[in-house]
Structure formats: C-alpha cells, structure tokens
Length: 111
Image (cartoon, rainbow, N blue to C red; front, side):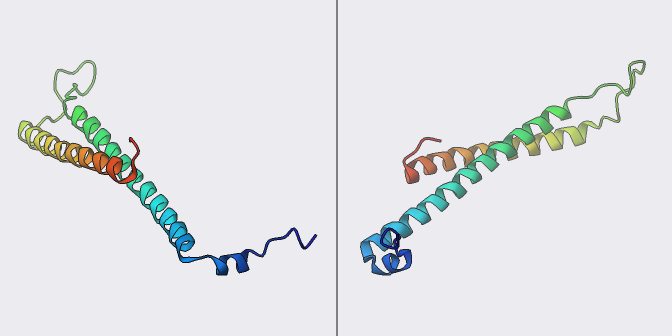
C-alpha cells in the first residue's frame, strides 16, 4: 500500500527549473486574469449604477397625485449633476473599452 502513495514533498523538491517556472506562470496568470476580469466587471457595474442615477435625475414627479407642485426641483443642480454624471459615464466607458481590449490581448480570451 505504501508503494502506491506518492511523496509529494520529495517530488516537489525534484522538479526542474522549467517545471517550477511553468507552475509559477500558471499561478500568476490565473490570478491576474481573475483580478483583471473582476476589474472590468466593476467598471461595468459602475456604469450601470451611474446610468440609473442619471435617469433618476429626470424624475421630477409631483409630490403626490393631487399636487401640481414638483418636488423641490432645482434646474442649476440638475444640469450640474447631469453633466458630471455624463462625463463620469463617458470616462468609464473609455476605461471599459481599453480594459476589455487589454484583457483580450493579454489573456487571449474574449470578454
């Protein structure tokens, strides 16, 4: 029965440089790919949330069904916030495009 057990520690010590490099490369590559993928997904999530927030800005519904008064709408604040969100979304879309292209280049996989 002991003949069937493989001494993993001894085998590990006997590996040559090529095997060690290959193992390290696989580990580093897998970790990097996972982190890169998560970063791209985080950018996508930020864009979606900001787009929802931007859509929420144009909801200027009256305070209630019977009211003709709109909820404290301030045009200056609306315009400023809408422009800020638009620029942030634009920058995130550029980041997303660059990150996806780099991911595909670095890892040879489509995102």
